[in-house]
Image (cartoon, rainbow, N blue to C red):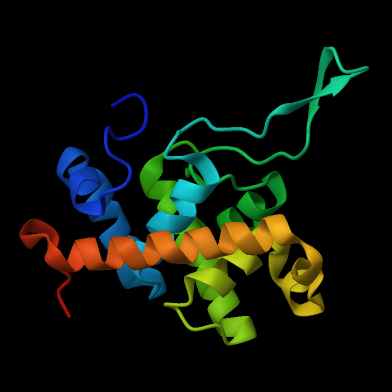
Length: 178
């Protein structure tokens, strides 16, 4: 299916429209122990559910399209370096950043690392997103503390995760099984 889901605001509607996404998210949650609603909120913030998303190009002299700010690509906006780490550690060498199942698994892997190394609760979407964006080192050093844009973005991720959690709990077809 091309393009993002028709209703990105409702997790139940997303999963009704894209049942494979639900299966992939459930598998990633089981593997990495990060709630589906947290991972989906991160993917939404990073790419708006656009498979081939990239950061915008800079402009040379304000006119000529130039280099991109980073190598981030795909649903998860994984950088080349982070993706290489994921491929090496998971031995999942055939993964693609523009494949939803691979991207959601990457997000679960990365957030699980943040949980294990930094002690951030798996449900803490705000702080997990801060580590996702700033990196674990940047989070530990507190580089995000003076970045109002990033703090606001993390708050939006947390708000979306909370909404997704409520929605997921209320939709019969995809009710979480514990």
